[in-house]
Each structure stands twice: as structure tokens, then as C-alpha cells.
Length: 171
Ligand SMILES: [Fe+2]
Ligand SMILES: [Fe+2]
Image (cartoon, rainbow, N blue to C red):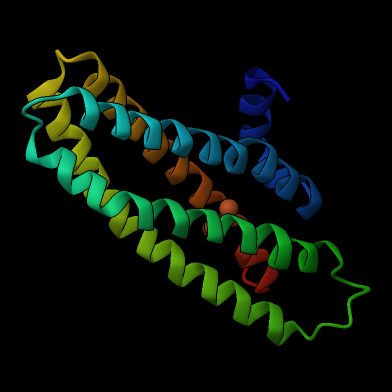
């Protein structure tokens, strides 16, 4: 799926069935998130190696990043390997609705935690742009962090606002 297709599809998501919404989430947002988090890890490493006097926000970001990165990878994996296959099999599934419901609640709690971390990441990205926007590695790092946040916001809105309420019979 190219970017234009993804954009056009994003606009029409509410009209699509669950299988298409899931395929959209995985092939656009999940892939994008994994890829950009790798780039951010690399940029943090480069910035720390290259800079003699890095801003304190770089140390703060570096201290939280590994946990954030691993937690997000685990969240994506749980959706792809546990929740989404359940949703795909819905109707013929032996799993009780309550099990799916519990898993959705668990994902929603994680979304809340992600939102909190994203606030922090946004503040750090803004500070890095302000203090080091003229240093290429920091400018790129801040830019990637902002892209990650923008994409995650859209990603979580589709899950929290469209897909999960459907599964919980709320829409
Ligand atoms: Fe997701
Ligand atoms: Fe999610």
C-alpha cells in the first residue's frame, strides 16, 4: 500500500469491515511505528556519540527510550498475535466475548500509558528542537519523534475510537 492509498483509505475507514481496518492498522501504522522507533534508537545513539555537550533532554530521552521502545513493540505484538486474530475469527470463534473484552480493556489501559509517555516525548522533542535544532542529528531526532507522535495519535484513535468500540458493541 503506498502513502496515497493509505491516506485515501484512512479517510474511509469507518465504512470498512473489521478485517480491512485491521489490515490497514498493521500495514500502515504498526509497520511505520516499528520502523521509525528503530531510526530513533539509532539517532539517540549517534547524538550521544557525536555531541560533546548534549542537552539534558537527550539524557532524559535516552533513559526512557529503551523501556518505551520495548513496551510499544510488545503492545503491537499482542495486538497482532492475540487480539486481532480473535477479532478476525469472530463469529466462528470458541473464545467467549468476555475474553476478547478483557484483552481490549488491557490494550486500552496500555493506550492510556502510551498517551502519557507521548506527552513526555513531545515535550522532549520540542526542547531538543529549541536547544539543538541547528545540530543536524538533534534536528532529525526531534523531527522523527514528532512524526512518531503524530502517527501514534492517529493509530490509537482508530483502535480506541473505531475498532475496539465495535468489538465491545458500543458502535
Ligand atoms: Fe495498534
Ligand atoms: Fe494499540
